Image (cartoon, rainbow, N blue to C red; front, top):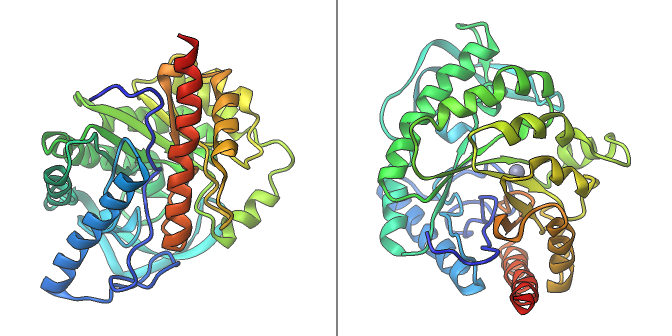
Length: 345
Ligand SMILES: [Zn+2]
């Protein structure tokens, strides 16, 4: 991977074009079908890539153009999960949702995202990051009527994710990221077995690995929940010490406009950190100087060669115009701090 100082990337999703899916919503239904849908997703992926390139993003992704939801689309491809008989469960202790039921041993029928990753790899020589759901977040999005053990089901998912990750690596993906918003909620389980499951998911990989731990998309359930967390968000404090000891290379976090005390980043010393310098819960576009200010703060606790400017979370629910503005601000803000750091040498 080429070594740019402060390489920029996004946490994952970008808005979809309005001809592909209903804009500015999560879970939006596809507007195309069959072969048209297949080529429509590829066209959207090309556009998402071009958008990132025009804005000057260094580590690019598919913008999650081919998936409806960051967890469910993966689970839909697995055996052992019944999508017809649904149950209502509480997601991340925050909101109720109707979810599929685990009814038998879970296994992967066939690769889920590998063809999409190969397609993206053909379009660019830039480093590619690919997002997968994390095992703990997957189990939190299901009703388990078979294993009846959160830990065991998470372990089974970790084995499946490892199969997928190895094929993504072979397809030329440079960084495989696991999305674990559940890490911000179930601290005891994270420390007991959550990180262990994540390490099972990355077993044997030679590419870089990341875990994205956020306070969620900028949707109402999450912004309401954030209001209950008090003036200082110290959730990260409970899990960073163990993550710092883990085999995961990169930790992706929410920082800008967040009540996370920035000094908590010091608990990750030695790890690479994707610092969220773009707020995804507002349409207000950051100025490059605001982005630079967040990065400078993070630099007090993260070595410059380990700091990766990023967004707080995915941008799927934003308008394309706002998302593009935020990508431009991210690249411009990183450029300011990059030239400051290079000026010092
Ligand atoms: Zn996120």
